[in-house]
Each structure stands twice: as C-alpha cells, then as structure tokens.
Amino acid sequence: MRVPVRLVILGGGPAGNQAATNAARLGADVTVVERDVVGGAAHLWDCIPSKAMIATGAAIEFVERAPGMGLAPLQAVIDAGAMKHRILSIEDKLRGSIEALLADQGVRVVRGTGRLSGPHGVVVSTAGGTEEIEADAILVATGSRPRIPDWCRPDGDRVLTTRQAYPPPTMPEHLVVIGSGVTGVEFVHMFASLGAGVTLVVSRQQVLPKKDPEVAAALEEEFLRRGVKLLIGARAVGIDHEDGGVAVRCDDGRVARGSHALLAIGSVPNSKGLGLEEAGVEVDELGYVRINQHCQSNLPHLYAAGDVSGKLPLSSVAAMQGRMIAEHVMGMQAREHRHLDYDKAAQAVFTEPEIAEVGVAEAEAFATGRKIRVTKVPFSSNPKALINDDARGFVKIVSDPATGIVLGGSIVGRSAAELISVLALAVNCNLRVVDVVDSLLVHPSLAESLSEAAE
Image 1 (cartoon, helix red, strand yellow):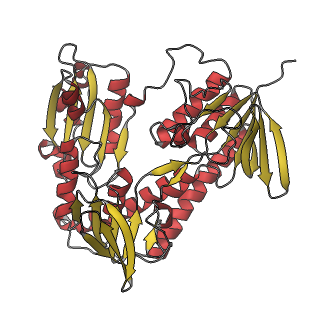
Image 2 (cartoon, rainbow, N blue to C red):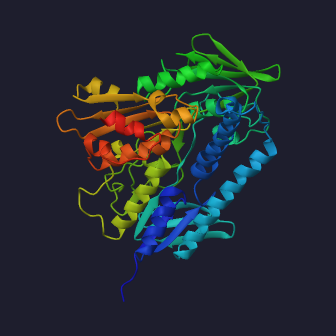
C-alpha cells in the first residue's frame, strides 16, 4: 500500500487553503497550521472588509446620483453599527465556507503557531501544549502584516494601521492617509465616499506611482473633484497629537492636519520566528523566501506562496500559487515550462471609478523602447455608460503591431475589475485584437468598448 505524501502548510490563507484542498483531493495527507483565522488575515481582515466598506460608499454615491437617473433627490445616512455587522457577517460566511471545504477534503487544521524544527519537521505551539509534525513537503504561506515605520506609533485610536480601520472606532472627521499606492488610494476613496474629509500624502510625483500615468491622472482628477487634498512630493516623517487630532509632518516642511491618520505604506512578510534560516531556507534582505518558478525554495521540498514569497501580493496570485504547488508536490507539474507568469496577472484598484490593468503597460513599453500599438476608447461614447449616468474613464488596449496579439490593457471606469477579465484572457491565451473584435458581445454593455478599442 502506497503511503500518502505528507504535506504540512503554515498558514491557512488563499495560498494555504488552495494548496490544502487540491493536494488532499489528489491523495495527500494534509495538515494546515493557522494561528489567526482560517481564510487568511490579509484576506479576511484586510481585503474583504475594505471592499465591503467601499461597496457601502458606492451605494451612497449611487443614491447621491439619483437625480441623474430621473429620480427625486435622495439621502443616505450611514449606520456604523449596521456596516460593521455587515462586514463581520461577510467574514463569517467566507471563513465558514473555507473551513467546511477543508473538512470535506479531510484536511487536518491545527490551531496554533508553527515553526520549522528542521528541514522536514514542524513544531506547533497550541493552547494545549506543543505538537511535532513530520512532513515530506512543507509550504510556508504565512502572509504579511502592515509595515510600521520607526517614526510612527499607531494607537488604534487616532493613528491607525489598515487593520484598525474596518471600520475605525470612531468615524474620522478628516483623515490623513499616508501612502498613495493601491491600499492608500482605496482608503482615500472609501472614507471620502463615507463623508470624511481626506488628505493624501503622496511621496512621489503621482498617486499610484507604479501605474500608467494617464490612469493615475484620471484618479487624481476625480479625487480633486471630490475635495480630496493632495500633498504631492511629500514624504511623511512624523506624527504629532494635538488638539484632539493629529499633525503629520513631511520632509519638505509641510504639515497635514486631521482628526485621524492612517498608515498605508506597504507590508512586511511574516517570516521571522519561523526557523527558516536555521533549517537552511534562503530569504532575502527583506525577509521574503526566495523561490523558483515552481514556488520552491532552495530546499526542493519546501515551498513558499502568497505575500511571504515576495511576488505580487494578490489573493488571486496566492490562490493560483497554492493550486500549482499542490500539483507539483504530487508530481503533476514537473516540467520547466509550467509556471506562473506574474507579468500577466490582472490587477484592480477599487476606487471610484475603478481601475484595472493587465500585461504590458503603455508607459512601460515606451520606457523600454518596445514597439506597440495603443488604442483608446472613452466610455463617453458607450450607450450603457450613458444609461448608467456614469461615463467616466476609458478602455486602453496595448497590442503588438506586427502580429496583432494583445499584450495588455488598462481600464478606468465602472466595473473595470470585471471588464479586465476579457483582456486578461486575451493576454494569457495570446489572442489577437481581431479575436476580441469578432466576439459577439452583449449590447448595450460596457464591454462593447473593449471591441471598439480593439478595432
């Protein structure tokens, strides 16, 4: 009788639970060690609550646009208690479904803090003591936590980390957001839509510094229209409490004052204290586990996925890593060409309007001298956008001028996170612009702008 492969997973987030259920389905003996919440702290305590609050803000904005839809003016009033209950309810449902799926697949879940006791061993500190587990393969999927600089001491009251703001103890009258990456701008949108005044401290020369400048400009324009204050080229260096509020000091002498401050300056991997280096696992200077295209560390039987792997910090990427690791552990993904292409992962920013992108960006191509063809169509010419009374934004498609293959694209506008799926499929399957044009899409729909941009 063949002995099943023993897979031990540290962390039950998107990477961990996907690896667990898929490996168990393929016949592995799987144990998941989780210290916080099955489903992932970054996923259930960051991603889902923020999107739930953003959805509430979107509902408020929709009500405010009622006159444009032929309705009498309406007013929405926030019920903070109901909003928090809604967030917790969504978290509970998602966690419950994940726990049920793990149980159905026969995955053993150990509640506690795990660390490597050697190359093939894991020791778990639980409420009842310690447990030693031997493994043939180990997956480290311990996620990340908000980065806190030396000059800041969050107190959970006036100075908040991202995980202390879903929702915060008291709704800010004026929030100073430090950090203009994806998380930062989502918080700006979230609290502005909920009625708070917002100041955004932008250390670079544009919000979303790693995104297409045209996309960033569209978001900046929308922020300014809504009364958001932008401190461009200002790097925060300190936070002082004063007069029942806070003052954020910047390196150029400017000061941003508000009732609350929120840190959104990235994350750090949860890799310390895991015994990685003692077991011989290589990590980089920031603490991320070094992995190859199969998510293997320098020890072939030890894998890393999700935020701790140092790749794109997206739940979708982590889940895909987990599925592929499960197959690789079971001997089904051994060929060199079977690996994830992180450059082709679709990404979205849940602001208003939404932003989404995939593949090659226009600015990136020009910077490297790559020959591309760029076509752009505004939603102002789209019938469904006019029906929705929301014609903001555009669709931009980047293609190869010689072959017509879709290389990438950007979308700014309503439902951008959904619409980008069409371009993501085109990019990952090497489809041509003519394939998009020849697709018979629904009319009227926002997706029609994809066909127009591809023509």
